Structures are given as structure tokens and as C-alpha cells.
Image (cartoon, rainbow, N blue to C red):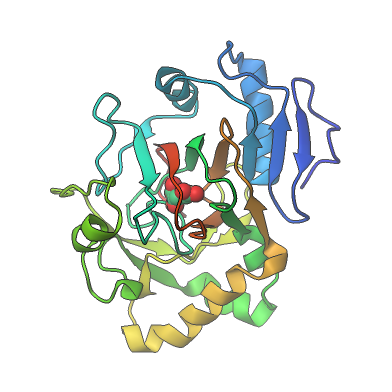
Length: 291
Ligand SMILES: O=C(O)CCC(=O)C(=O)O
Ligand SMILES: [Fe+2]
């Protein structure tokens, strides 16, 4: 469980940002060599806090990629075009004229893939003067707080997760929605990459062994049930998972690198900065098949 504030970390300071999850890390410089010892301490901070905000960084795309590769292979987004010079980095850009933002609903990354992203690393290049925060929810607490009766039901369910055409999108494809709403985000054809997958609703975190209620906006329905049959219970789980006491809210500054664990969290990028620009550099790390 969560460590007492700052107790076990030798290489940097860790300060929790909410009661249930999330921590700021200061005193770490990712432009310098990250030794195995430092890396294992960062891993401990991530597993304890689920979302870590490494503050005050000044790193190049190469340095961000090198740090990301320490965690595993880079996961390429099947629908989104990476940066021209760095295809493994997705520039998340919202311009003052864009009405929508990327990630503006509760979801966990690449849940539609057979092996969804283990983690996502977002590096803030340009943030609005206020707003543009990202909210997170702790899916361990979402599961652990269910009654024994509801846990038994949840334990048996599997979700059908779909990468395009989510229900909230009025049946419009990503390409259609994004091209007129997010001018600088380029959608690509996923080709033959699998973008619909079935996962257990309750997944076990491969490193901590804790169970999490693995829900997010990509879930279309429960396996073996119709959309209509799934809806009431799915709505319940979606709403329950983001109860305020399970969440934290990350306030960005230029140079913040936030790394989150998609295996036990979901997130929501808040779209509350209509006339400003926000630019992030995003790298996702490959994950395992949920069990
Ligand atoms: O821009 C953000 O704060 C998060 C966007 C998002 O959902 C993601 O990068 O996975
Ligand atoms: Fe996301």
C-alpha cells in the first residue's frame, strides 16, 4: 500500500496530491543518467501512487524516448499518426479554435487492444494559463469498494472493447470526428491491427497482484450480452469507478512529465480552456494481456 510521505525514497521527493492516488516527484532530472537503482525507485513510486508527476523537466524527444524504453517496448497508437521526426511520439495538440480535445472522456489507454498499454507518459510542452488538467481514477479502489455480492458478479464478466465508433460518439468514426474538431491530430487507418478485444472486467495487476475494476469508455458491452442488457450494469460500474474519493487531478506546468499505470487507472482530459493552446508529447509503453 501507499508509503508514508517521502519515507522510502532516497533519490527524489514524493508528495501525494490526493488521498487515494497520485504524487508529485521533485528532485529528479531525466536529462541525466537514470541508473537501475533510480529506475526501480521510480517504479516503486508508480506502483504505490498509480500516477506520478515528475516536475520541472527539460528533456528532448530523444531523452523522453530513452526514458520510456527503460519500461518496455513502445506501443504505437493504431489510429493516431505520430510526429513526423519521432513516429513513436504522439503530439497531443489542442488549438484555440478546436472545440474538442483528445482523451476528453473517462477511458484507459488502448483498452481495445489485445494487450493494452501498460503505461502512458505525457510530457507538457505548452499548457494553458489555467485549466487543461487531467483527472485520474483509482480502479483498485473501485473494485475493492464493491460489496461481496457485486464483486462476485463483476468477477465473472468480460467486456467487449472497441477502438472506433464508441457509443458516446453518435456512431461517427474517429476520422470524421477528429478531422473537423482537432485540427492538428491526424488519424490513420489501423490497417490489420486488432482494435476490438475482450478483457476480464476484473483484472489482476501483474506486478502488485491487486484486482482492479477495468472499465473505461471503450467498453461497448459485456461479452455474451446485448448492448441493451449490458447498459444498466455498465453505467453503474462506469459511474462508481470515478467517485470523487477515488480520483486525483493533475495540474500541469510546462516541463511536467506525468506517467500513469493504465492497468489500474482511468483518466479524463478536462476541456476547459477554449481560447488557448495545449501541447503534450505522449509515449505509451506496451503492456500484457489482462488476466
Ligand atoms: O491530454 C491529456 O491530458 C490526456 C490525453 C489522453 O487521454 C492520453 O494521452 O491518453
Ligand atoms: Fe488517454
